Amino acid sequence: MTGEKWIIYWNEYASNTYLYGSKVEFRGKRTVFFENRLMPPGTVIKTWYSKTNYQMQRIEPSLPMIDGETEYRISVDMEYPEGGSCVVRLVFLDKFEEEAGFLIVNGESMCFRCPLKTYSYRMELMNAGATAFCFHHVTIEEVERENG
Image 1 (cartoon, rainbow, N blue to C red):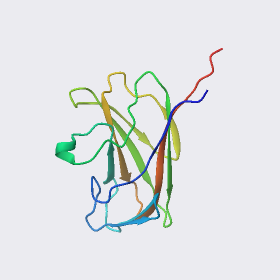
Image 2: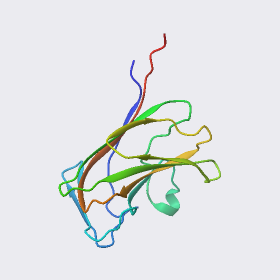
Image 3: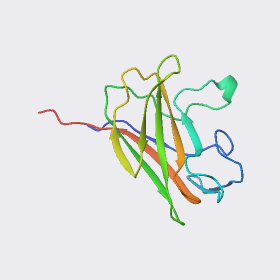
Image 4: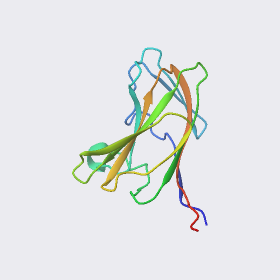
């Protein structure tokens, strides 16, 4: 038996995207080319949410609901034609929208558990020195552990 698996794509052009001086090009259905030669490291390029206020943001949630009792693996599928990199930061929020913790994914894949009091979370794609990249998708999946 395998756990649930969710694939997160970059679907919206302008919504929650750093556009100042940026070139954002949708290549095919599942790839986004992003370029910005002047963007400083640490800038949040794109944000996805597990819970949204549609009336205010005009977007639907794009992240799965997760809980603090399950272990998950997050995998990032990106290419950097000119070097540099990006990191993914997961910010966990409690029911009062206060930060309950965060996690930095610095690399292609890692396992994690969110804090037990997590009510919602957001995923931020942050610049770590890249001037251009191709974003394919992020995968979040439940990690099945053998009992025995």
